[in-house]
Image 1 (cartoon, one colour):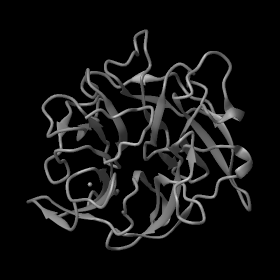
Image 2 (cartoon, one colour):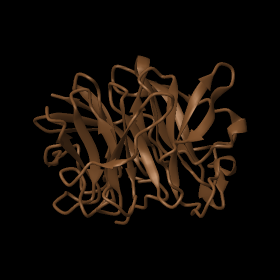
Image 3 (cartoon, one colour):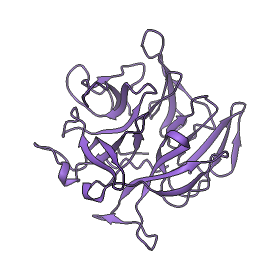
Image 4 (cartoon, rainbow, N blue to C red):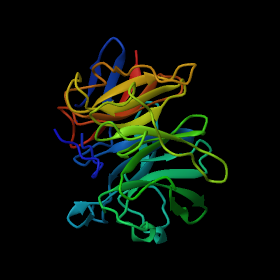
Length: 305
């Protein structure tokens, strides 16, 4: 099954509970026939996720016959369901749409998002493909919402950059890209990279995480846990099918150890992506298109036995 980075809609499905010696997995209440993916959890159990933008009649808004993706926010309850769901407040003057994945900085002063070069105000100079994605950062203004979106300076128009996530200490930004050429070139269709977050809104140059993380297939949707474990999805050989979730430990030397595939029921025979886990490693979320779901990509909540 071909999953396209350019649409970033890894529309993935299973209902009720599944059990193993390690995990209990459930399909949460907000799922329906539309995709739900691109998860992150911020302060006070605030959850961000991606789904289609709807009009007042509940129909999907489109642009050139494609559904428009945007960000929603809600509050996680003790059962893992997401309540009080609403659109994330974004300054309408920013002309930013087709947002597929976002993450707050640890202090919630900044919002990093994946967007498309179709956003005309932010179109860079030079040749580019409108299907390419890039990462922008915004700041919050009371009464206005998230505003002052800026493309991160290391994003080059001819490549795609997506799925930003920040390390718990706020010093490193991990992301997916298909950068070509030079020492840091992607090995596969997309690799996981990192940059250091420096002072004065500056960043180091992208660094490929290397062969213990990346393969000659595709890697995407990174997440760095509080205990220095990198989780991500890959369609490399040896998986259960589609994109599977893997983990790599960042050791005391600052090196990533060999990737290990997570077991079922976290993984399935279909695409499993967007894995996140809380600071005490007791629960988390992921998205999947596994059999038995409610629609396209469904969000699943898991706890450890």
